[in-house]
Length: 250
Ligand code: PGA
Image (cartoon, rainbow, N blue to C red):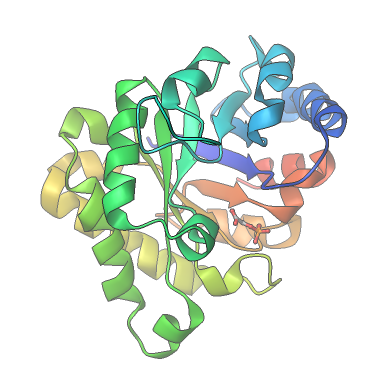
């Protein structure tokens, strides 16, 4: 039985005070969530310390949205994996399409980051997904398979067991356009097949999340698909009620 996860990626939204309030509301409402669904929230770096104090001991997991590609040193403006672990993060998102697109994050950089994150005891939420042009050219399987293999095939099985994968078609992120349940299921199954080529039966145990305009109105249909194990939620994670409603959609 794979773990069901609903993770909220707050991106660059909320002040610290607003973030603490949002975390409190999520914790309060998390009592309604079935025990087999794990909630994770990923606030901006500046919020991690106070939000950790809110979520500690509640079962709501804390994630960063990114980490540095070096362990420490002269890298102005960057945040190292040990710093994230030190403020109570258990997870970090890696390879989000916004990082790939706007900050030049390559598969090579992601290989460095994922190894550092795992070494620091963080579970990576590793994002993959094609853009609209790639989808329209029918290249989505190739693009996503390459993203999966280039980074995840560098891991041992023991490391891979700690990774959560998130499939997020770029054309569906923040656009209100969701992949249909069939489109999402087909590519989730493909990702699992690709993972099985390298990791065998372990692929059946890896949680694969769907992300891209996932909201209370479409979560049920998406989560009903056999290879969709939850969601990575952007916009709808900024409202505790919507985030919880999504988590109640299994
Ligand atoms: P969205 O973002 O739910 O706002 O589309 C999802 C994500 O980018 O993780």
